[in-house]
Image 1 (cartoon, one colour):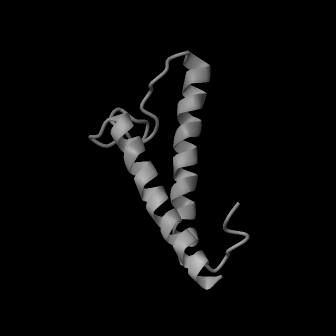
Image 2: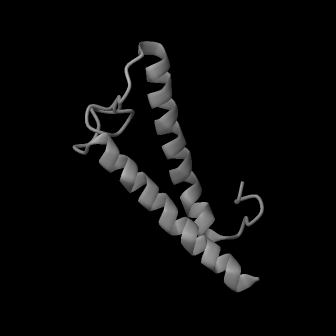
Amino acid sequence: MLLPRFPTNPWLIAVTPLAAWHFVEHSVMIATYVQTGVSGTPGLLSSGGLLFGGLPIARPDLHFLYNLVETVPLLIAWIVELRAA
């Protein structure tokens, strides 16, 4: 939603693929829940995940990192746009 409005902001360009990956991760977890009824599944990259068994990190910790890696560039992008206005 932000990238079409601010297509030259390098921070938005950088964070868009990360946000898309986070969306895919949630989509996999939701699809797994709908198919199996099991909540709290690892998704793609947390420990036990679908991609190569995942990383050695618990799902809540990975989710925190996803949110951190998305939020920091979004805040920087916001500051860049405020200064440009």
